[in-house]
Length: 82
Image (tube, rainbow, N blue to C red; front, side, top):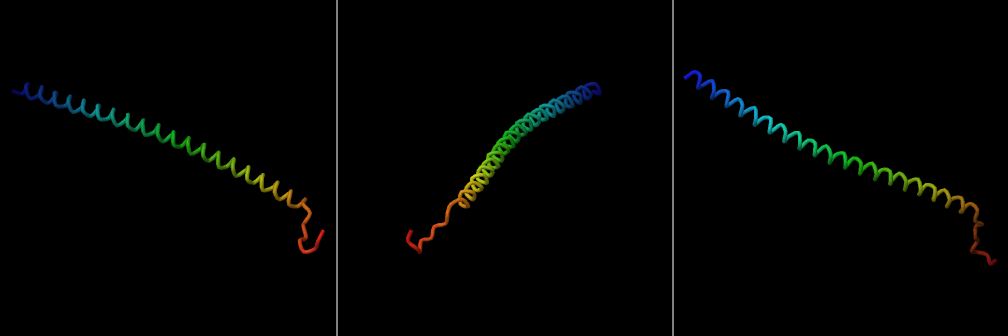
């Protein structure tokens, strides 16, 4: 009777351990997938930030050129005929 209980206990422990390992493997797999998605999102955000910074630089340069051209233009006096 004692031997049978020992075998049954070992079987139960083996099953519990097997279930735990299976669950742990699934959890690790899901975490790996989530991490990959987060890395993709981070890379996408980095690209968008780079694009915004480039646009800001382009707008700043265009604004500087506009100011330079405005300074060079002769003001027009519309109240007196040419």
